[in-house]
Image 1 (cartoon, protein in one colour):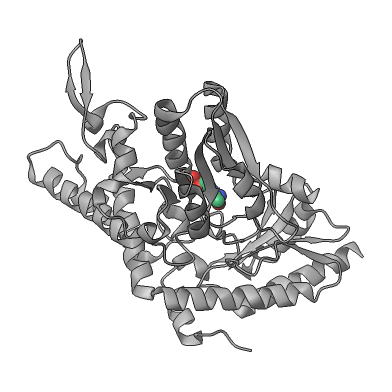
Image 2: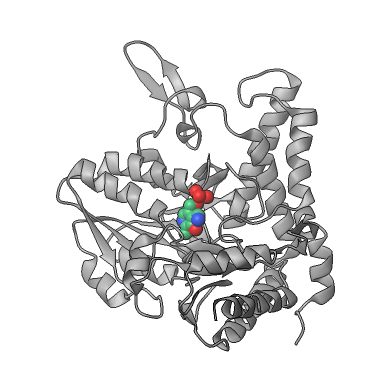
Length: 410
Ligand code: PMP
């Protein structure tokens, strides 16, 4: 059994300087990609190049550097729009990441459209970032939060969803891919269900954009949130796709800076979209890094990425299933390369700590999905989340590590 594209993977790994470092004297195995992915040289260089050569505030200057920075900043907006197939770059708003994008809509949309007695639907497998902002909006407005249940396999119960959608529902907010279980939700199908009752759909795409192509027009979702740092780009930058018709009607989230049109003490008017939602000086350097990350992903191509990740997912699932006492949580047929598991009789923190000392980085805990942990009646799991730069040999190291953990506790 060999990695699909052995030569290509080796050359791809060379693009990521951190992958060649050691942890406690052992070569790093980085299986925490759902928390954040590593960064290729192209991204690191784009950020440092911006500060070395191009740094200036955008949108406000007549001087060369400001104009140059503004052009480069807006070029990345176009690149992001093309990456998700938005119908216009004006439908892309830069935010600090997915969490800020969700908060933006949960505030701006709900301030404009949510009323007492209305309902918002989320699911039992959502990340806290796609639960709490909606929950707080409901509290502010006297509305109700409804929850789509998940099955033992980690799939959404669409029959229950059908019964939840009604004339009081003002938003269906759902994750594209579960960060804990890896389940890929059938979002296009869900959008059809919601739209048949004129209900808009917000997609938390924090895990969605790194594992496969996303076409927001094809999905026909109303909003799609993402974080660059989970797409091999920098931390502190990400964005929101929103349909023009919604963005134009929503009130701004934060105030000041480029989002202003005209200020008098009697009245203030706001800039057009997308600027209406981008208050203050933006994170220009990391936007440059984000643009480089998209170039990088485009250069690799989805065929390579999805084939390698699916191969690792199946290989890891098969190997983990073969270990006595290991239970995998999330067994949907449609999964990204994320495997959550428990080792019978051994606390996930203990197992994670021992694996760490073997140079293997996995995540332990509830993965910001406490309601999902409640569904399974557990307090946490170990989670191995893999990327295209990981290898079967690294999965073998994880498996050997788990045997070491088991023998230490035997
Ligand atoms: N939603 C999901 C499904 C996630 O996995 C994450 C990050 N773990 C978030 C939202 C929040 O993303 P960020 O921390 O980048 O804002």
